[in-house]
Image (cartoon, each protein chain N blue to C red):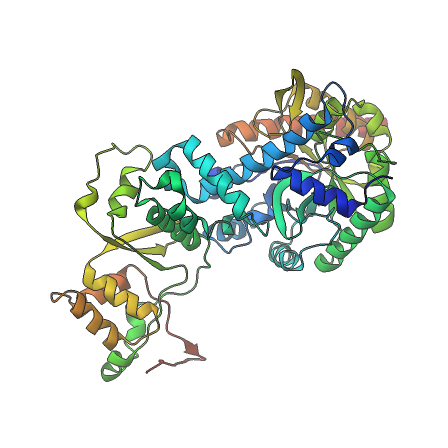
Length: 266
Length: 279
């Protein structure tokens, strides 16, 4: 009795993740190349191609640990969290958390944060090009309303904080960079990941700026965000920080209603 | 689309093509690489002014017994609507089972049951896109003992039932024929040549498998001599069509890829001229 297609695909899928089945092998024509060797071609390709997809999304992690280590880690991840849809640029959201718990990587405590940075850069790169807030847009907002103004971050923007200097680690692991040792004691880094015309990038924020952005990301008004900035750093300068972020095109355009600007005020 | 030779558009070449607009017949993209609204997609949209496009999907999993992933199908349909490509295609294979995506073109048994499944999935795809799609013969590393149809018979029946076109990958049949001990010219004689809408060309690797040579469809080198020879036979037998050169691993300088496409273009011209003389 030949296998039903449903059963055949179930057995084949199990074989791809390492569970061999005598029934499946007996359904395959073998000759001088036996059936199980033929099946292994597919298993090998699936593992290799998904590992390559993860390496493309997490290039800094791969550069830090080397290809062999990365591929072993990727295989373990794929076994636990296989892709559920075919757009591989969207595969790997759980990878940073997996790296954090991956026993062989425990000697690299910053690795999971670097993975979060790689993921954020990947998300920013694939985010849509929506309109950004420009200085001219603010001219229409009455000065007395500015404190209660809510400005969202642009699509794809993310704030990545780490106890480790992952900005320096990232730069040191870029291809063609002379590998100066990074002092892990250099302390925490707060990075703002953004999309720009043709790629994604990040800037390092001062502590006050990071606190300011963190409150804005949660949908709070400028006034509250500014207070958080000051609390984090007494030297926080709201107008300088705001001008810097505006120049980076970090904010989404204000919501529009026809020609009239509707400014969300809390 | 005219019977010209084009190239598979890969991200390392995107900036150069956007800047220099080199001459080539058309550009083919993998649908799954342009579904996220990235800057790369905007570059593609700008290139539409200068190039015809073809959309090649790799993840619709037309052979899945559970049917198509409707969410993914909707995204591919939206891409096709925006790009209005000359040709849309995917493979005679499956890659999804029980919600897991395997990123490979997995083989089907060529049975009546599989025929029903694939024909139904193609019909659903054509309905969602509102157009004909073409189905590509996959590279195979194994065959199933319970297959009752040959691959060309299976493809011919899909054409008859669903009205789909065929994307004939010349490299894939060289790979499959070697691995499954078939004669590529026998295989070809069973194919409904009139349904072919596009040809694919690519390089393959020769690997060792338990001491035996097995051909691997890695798209990682220049097109092999055997593939060029068979391509010349095919276009003289079934006629010239838009022809794509693909290169997906160890991607070379753009000039190398364009050179391969130019060679295909010269063969198309020669075959076309000979056919016109004979007519």
